[in-house]
Length: 163
Image (tube, rainbow, N blue to C red; front, side):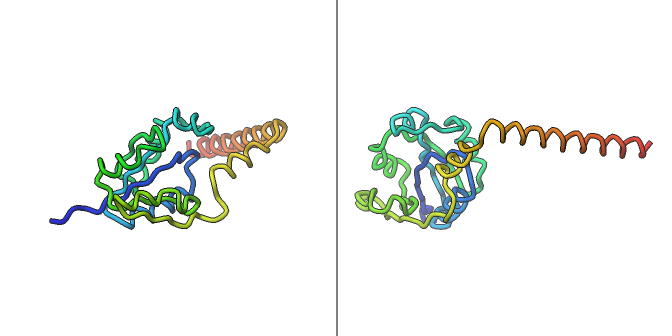
């Protein structure tokens, strides 16, 4: 039996979205096993990033994705060669916004850069959310409460008519 083809990738994977799903799906299609190096909270701080979800939460989310087989912490930029060797990766894959940044890994495995999903990114989502004003939040909360009140009323009336 031949050795399974192992694909390795890295990222923060905060605010998990369709772009993440599509990238992971395409990476997994390149091999038999997909392993993800997930940026630790400490590494994100070094990079000047702050994730909405903690490392443990992001790890749980990633592991719930059917394309991901294993997740391990990424603590620094320099660990990639050791990780490729440790996990016996055949393919190192990243989004094409990183083209050329990891070409030195070609000495250890095949490096591929895949197209990103257009018009979606975690940064864009965070920017859009940051534009919501406190007044808009209050209006949204009020409308949600109104919708819940309607649902409760309808549900109660249906329950009464069943008796």
